[in-house]
Image (cartoon, rainbow, N blue to C red; front, top):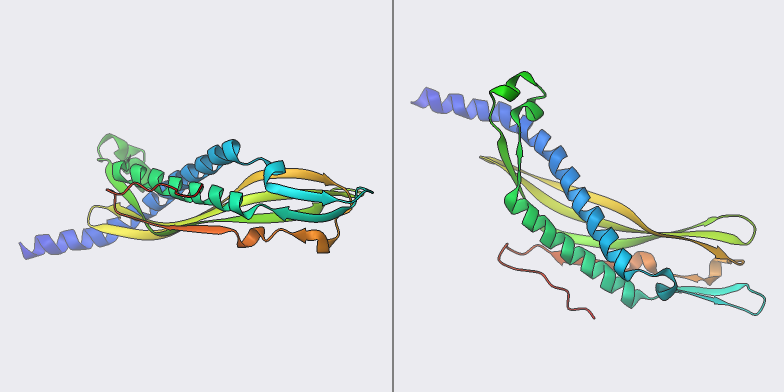
Length: 212
């Protein structure tokens, strides 16, 4: 009896890391896909560059000030963070089944080996923030690129074991050519400080944004 327990213990020590490594890659891909889709869907509906980025010019067409509407940016970041959390929770409960051939990279055992059920749950915080880049696009032309970066932590769960990982995804949401001379002193974006964090709640909670 004792020898059987020791055998199972040693087998778990050998096999569990292999399963977790395979699950790590799969869950990162699924999490990244969920984040990417959530960001794009929300930005397609709620991000209009001209409504969020205010460009003030003088009579000669020179740019006096570029400023972001942080209230709208915060609302969008909040919606993305909360929706990502809810989608990740929903996906994590159902999980995925990984074939033995995928885990051990051996097609022969695909006819014999069972599939391993892998689940996942968000842990800690999901954070969204904006990244704003200005680059020259020619004489008196500036390319303004805005991306949203989402960072979340997830716990990968397999029978008798688990692993915590961080997933970070940066999604471009806008790229615009600004015509006019843009002096550095005119850029008052503060967009990098526009962030939102939401904490993971148990599965019986449904997160909703209260920002209007």
